[in-house]
Length: 259
Image (cartoon, rainbow, N blue to C red; front, side):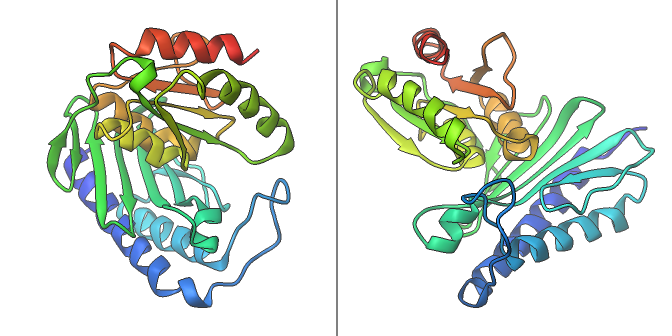
């Protein structure tokens, strides 16, 4: 089944902006729910309301499509198209007011990512991409960093804050921190789109979920970021990204430390 990907991107961007506006408006009155997988895996009523806003509109527009959504509003579909949704990537930052967060929407045809949107509500920035069509920020083309050497590079790191993954991240940080220009910890989607915009020279994400990286990874790849993991393809277990010249050194260092 064919799909107008420009129309899909327009809808996704509009929904992401609507969800971001809801998040800003309700930040002072949010209510926290019970933690999910572990004590640091938090969720608020705003996460759930944002997801419902997005999923309901997608189902109205394309009732045959499947959805995978972080807060449980997914469903099966028969069209061969699946929407991957993280309504609020970076809930801990959002709740504590200590950093950025984003709204993430990706569209897959089978196993292939075809369209992606990542919206930063606080900065009013919308990153997007269509498979084979390049990456955009607020409608203007963006491109990855040309890649300075690791000793000068700004590297992003993202990881799930459960005990096992924190130990894993600690091993990687012990390797990278003395060797890199500097490191920033940010949510996975923004890590990837900041690489796409050249703000970060490289980055890595550990033990994510598909909705954390699906949208950001397509945008990064369309901007010229090289992506991989322990093998030639990135995964939720490990995603490494960098400009072409930085990629060999960064990926080798991360893979050596992540054992």
